[in-house]
Image 1: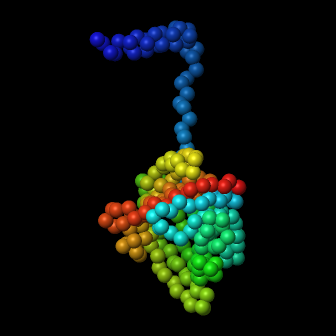
Image 2: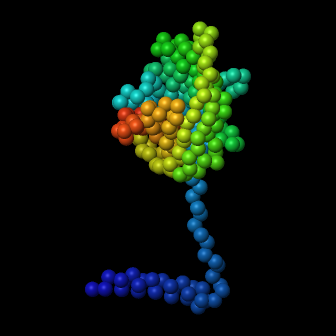
Image 3: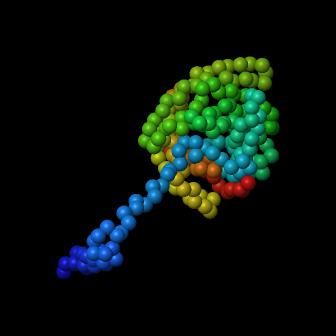
Length: 235
């Protein structure tokens, strides 16, 4: 039995029909048009989040303290920036941390954060100098980021720490969670070079939603835990 005979006949028949429609192979047919090429999100696209977005966190491995997140805008060090507010509770009444960032022409700039005690009292303020994730970073590329973490304590203390992180843009991936699909999320592998014993963090960042999933991997390759988005309240 010749399995290729039927497809070949269909191909020849289709070609003949096309030539007939074009006047026997003359110049009457328009040139073939290439299908549109899908443009995948870049670094800036993936970190651009809708103000007013809320979501709760699934964290069965107890990798972190926060249980819910709100995105809004607030003033930090004299300028208004997007902020990711983390809460100790699902209802979003007790602050755990605030992380300030902005989307700029050259990439995503991280400005700093506030950390709070379980009682909701501010414990520290961190101001970052030079913490920029470049928008030119393309899939499969790696960048090493050097920045300074200036820590201000409520007791008047101050500590400046030199930080170094290595980010690899591993590519795009579509995730399904919270009853919805998040197409073409950017997947980053992040290593804190100043704390190599901490291992590796893999982070999925979805356009419009920001970081939606984290995987924490020990230096021996075992997975320490996974944290992800559980439910979403659109703005």
